[in-house]
Amino acid sequence: MRWSIIGLGNCFRQDDGAGRRVVQQLQHLHPEWPIREVSGDSSGLMECLEDLELAVLVDAVSSGAQPGTLHRLNASDQALLSTLHSPSSHTLGLAAAIELARALGQLPSMVWIYGIEGADFGYGDALSPAVEAQIPSLLEMLQREIPLLISG
Amino acid sequence: MSKPQIPELTDETSEISTASTSDPSAAPPPSKRAARQSSTRTIKVDYLARVEGEGALQIQIKKGVVEQVHLKIFEPPRFFEAFLRGRMFHEAPDITARICGICPVAYQMSAVHAMEDALGVVVSGQLRALRRLLYCGEWIESHVLHIHMLHAPDFLGFQDAIALAKVHPAIVQRGLQLKKLGNQIVTLVGGREIHPINVKVGGFYRVPTRGELQPLRDRLAVGLEESINAARWTATLPFPEFEQPYEFVALRHPNEYPFCEGRLVSSLGLDIDIHAYPQHFQEVHREHSTALHSVLDGERSYLVGPLARFALNFDKLSPRVQALALELGVTPGCRNPFKSIIVRAIEVVHAFEEACRIIDSYVQPIEPAVEISPSAGIGHGCTEAPRGMLYHRYSLDESGQILDAVIIPPTSQNQGQIEADLKAYVTPRWQLPKSELTWQCEQAVRNYDPCISCSTHFLDLSIVEVDSTAESAPGHRDAVEET
Image 1 (cartoon, rainbow over the protein chains, first blue to last red):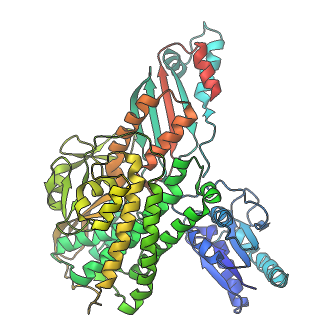
Image 2: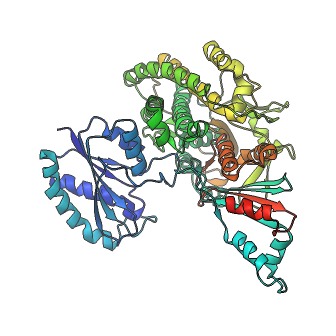
């Protein structure tokens, strides 16, 4: 199966870098897994999705939930709630990149998004304590579920 | 980015409505008193989509006459100019690149040229050619993204690029492929797609080999053909009839369609060395914005950008690109800002041609950069960013430390002209339904591909109708409720 884990986010915007931290640690635990990182601009995401059958995306989320809350979303069969809002019109947010790929018929048949609710998205490279505390749980979830997705 | 939502009534408007039904003998509070004398209607759109950065637009209409158009750009007051002071000359390209995520090459090019001007250095030959190649990459990626993702949806009534992609997937797909080629040029020559790391005063840290450029060259050949198809498509879009008597300002070079070098010229006869920029161009403060407005020779608004370059340098395009432009119905005298989308597409074709030419003649330089010795001096740099002429000026002390910096981006130079355009555009159309007028105003702002980066607020569009009749007029209230 052609698959990839993709960590997204901007490491200089505190919790926005959580997705990338998680996949970096995942790579240590599983050097054999195909893992990539995409920085704040998700327009590179569409290229990462090309020709995949399964994409596992890991990103920080800002949905109003309790910081540290873990989210899991199947993006293959439902349109993402998207206003395409992005701090910059010249970058694509995650939802926008996925919906654009979908509109162009380029979305992998399986796309799973694992999110961790952030608390602070200010300037800096440290994660907030609430997010830091939940990283092990998210890693555990990914290590448990990804093998199921690959084999499924 | 959603289409402007059905505008909501502001609190102020609701208060006016209720005030008129409350006890008429009670003196309204001062703010409401003023409102009662000249009732205002404020329609607020949450943010202007598909514009880089943030800003606000307010249009004031009285008795059917557009009295004022204010484009408010909430720009952090010149932090970059301030914190460049005390930095070393060689840090300027990397620091100023951070002003913009979509045109960092432009900032780097204006910075290095200004520093080299101050230090008495000329970068020529293949290093000069590599800089032009890098700039080709940025023009391609910036213009293509704007054309397809930001501007075209307007013309076709789509709320965003995703809606456009659902109906015209091949068009959007082609746009993404073209943009990718622009990114590849920037990555190969600049070392990184965003905020290139390979640019320095004097040249580059590393230059590519011919072998590294060849695979790109093959892909660019395909890109060139596709860019011509894309340009032909932009000419099929529906364009409003609208022209403005612009004074165009751009660089002009004796041999080339301009990137980094040339004299500064205008369509009304300006023809100056770039060192004379401060004598002719001034920035004036306007109360409604922290941004400074740029004026030419005292009071004239002017236009920089693709339309200006095209008007002033048409003869420097290749015969094939000139023929394409004429085929597509744009001549150097084009003053319809909506047709800037076609001109951007033509500049993309030119950029692909130029990139191919540069790679075909490329001989790897022996040294990646020219030797630099710091010295005291003042240097000016004018280069053509995708959005227009970008001016840098630095003062250096004898150790090469920056004493002073002036950075004037193209979008701020265009601010006065954007306002003038909107005033002229709205004047005959002020009676259109609000949502339709709002949409068209946003489209008119997007004609400029404005880069209001580093701003911190949304672009709000508010159309304030100042009507001297009393707010109790039923027609007024009906119209308010209709929105």
